[in-house]
Amino acid sequence: MSNEKNNPQRPLRVMISAGEASGEMYGAELITALREQFGDTGNAALPAAGAAAVECFGMGGERMREAGCELVVHARDVAVLGLVEVLSHLPRVYREFHKLLAEVDRRRPDVAVLIDFPDWNFRLAKQLHRRGIPVVYYVSPQLWAWRKGRLRLVQRYVSEMLVIFPFEREFYAKSGVEVEFVGHPLSELEAPTVSREDFAARWGLDASRRWIALLPGSRSKELRLNLPAMLGAVRRLGAEFEYVMPVASTLDRDWVRGRISDCEDMWDDDFPKCGLAAQEIKLTDDARASLLHSRVANWNAVRDGVSRGRADLDFRAAPGEVAILRHGEPGSRARGSAGTDTRSIYAGEC
Image (cartoon, helix red, strand yellow):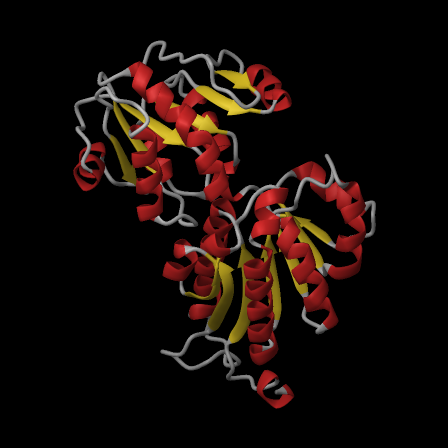
């Protein structure tokens, strides 16, 4: 194995672990950037033309697969939420964890890139460190806000932190952690070039009507908890709008469609159609309003929609998040309902 690793013709071998939709989107962008960087450099140490200069494997979703990552574990098989759900799925999560480790032992990657998803990735970092594999942690968990005791895990098992907020660099540097500020990946994403009309044709929407986007979350439990309230809002808003939900790459579309049907069956009256789509960024760009569960992708939707003055938003979030949003965007018309129940629906000037 050591002879193979020292072979100058062997591709750069990267293990990537991303367990959520936002993380695996960043993982896909990282894979694309690595291939661009190493694909045509003229470096004699890289494989000959036609051979893969970068070999990626690990855990992620469909975006990472499309970018060229061999998925050993699919993120949807381990993306559980809450103590009860974790305990009920523990045997499966344990199997998937050791399945990934077995592939690490077989392939011996040059580096491991772990993206957010701390409950899984800190355990993985410990195992990778024991195997002598350098660990780069991309997108830091919010250790500066809560569970600061986990900083010891970073100091012990992580070779370098790649952080997306400037203040995180100081937080880690003063604790002796090798750290580099790389900027937020969302700020570098190019806007989709597909037109509103083409997008509507692809996903069965009417481009002349007003759309409302539903973003209940990227984990199965999030969707189960948030979707009934959101569809209750749809029922109250009525057929004046078209409703569409982007399905995260960590979720199965047929399963999501089944959950929508379950909710529709709870009401006897006519229920407005709710379609499924992909391309969340394009959708939230064109939608006149969004009902959000506050997570990374949805904060991006809030930022884009509110800053353009085009969306009145009602969302579910923790009280602290509501306070931040109310005071964070001068002149914004967004408002939120804190806690676990969406009680007010505000269509405003949609």
